[in-house]
Image (cartoon, rainbow, N blue to C red; front, side):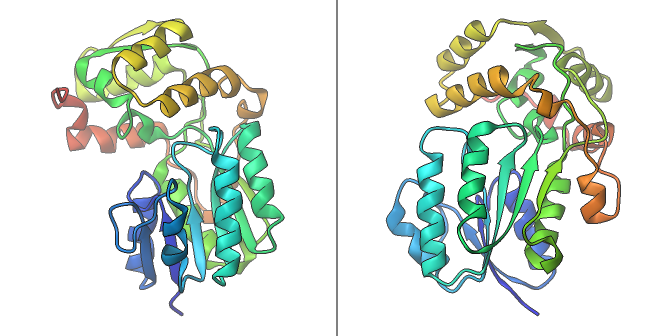
Length: 278
């Protein structure tokens, strides 16, 4: 049976993987993006109705994160419009251990639609598809919280869980917390990447104020700077995140991808050895 599914953030880290997986299974997929037709833009509520028209299910990911100011109001508005358009099921990508994100979850949980909440730990792909990439390419990485332990989860695993939740009724009403199989510090991450690509990557611990100032000087958007500050102060080191879960295996019947596998696959693409774009 074909489903009509809107994937918000359909060109992003998880969204584009979900779009591909759903299309491979023959479903009718609409990509929720400013560049698509019909367009979807979180900042333009007038685009929401057209994007939701005729859709039965929606994957929701909010950029840059559900924790940022304004996210709660946006999720409330989107859910109202989704109900008005006859959407039956929503799958929300949330952050693990983020109190602000949990307020957005409550909107979805109490909206009257079928739902699944997917709380993800930090992504492996932060090091290859986000602003951690360029410092790695340059061979010099400076980050706060150098020894914070994170159970990084792979975007492919998140996408597989989201697809399963969208298509299978047994996941209705569930909250899944997704992590990888082991903890890594930033030091250990850089060591694994350096070994895989065969080049030196210097890692330097840095204070958070200096790091956020560096991001501002590099032209990183203000909402991302706010988010980084929030994540490094409120989420990294949070006891709720010092847990390795088994929800990937519970949903998919297989182990989550280990960081070393991600590193091997990503190193093979050559992305980490490319010159920094000026």
